[in-house]
Image 1: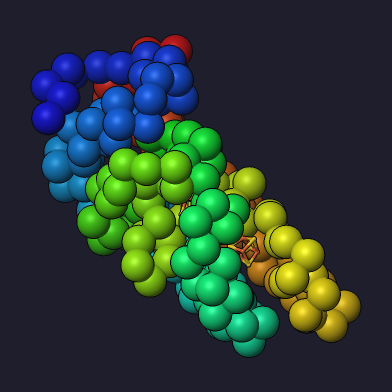
Image 2: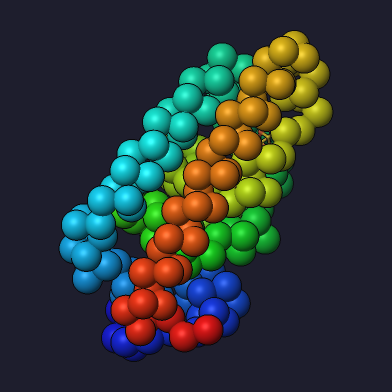
Length: 179
Ligand code: SF4
Ligand code: SF4
């Protein structure tokens, strides 16, 4: 548990994914109590969860889950590598914690530490994860389906970005983020 009371942008966006996880967990308890009373934040988080569900429905219609499960079951076969785990910064990890996800490193191998037995643990994922569609997925989808998928990803990414900016503002105002 990190007991530091304020952090730098380097703490949020640099360092290892383990260090960022520790920062997010250190900030979470007090921050969650404070943000529960922040109406713009709770409203925007509720909207983000609706957009995330909409995207999940579109992905299910494209059989994303089955394709990725088969692929991820092969050693080195999936696209969720440990390198990709590093795309998760502290604001995004905090956002997942605030949405009720039990964010934790699930593994320590060549795959992303957030890749569990049933897929990605996170509700809110990095831009690179959301934007990536491999050949199998693109070939199996009709152009209209791909368009719906890309639009849903765009809407969710926009909302995630706005929420992350709000989190950073609140942290700066409270003196917990310097820079
Ligand atoms: S997106 Fe494509 S490459 Fe990545 S795990 Fe799914 S099926 Fe495999
Ligand atoms: S989709 Fe999830 S499990 Fe896959 S690389 Fe991104 S964060 Fe990791």
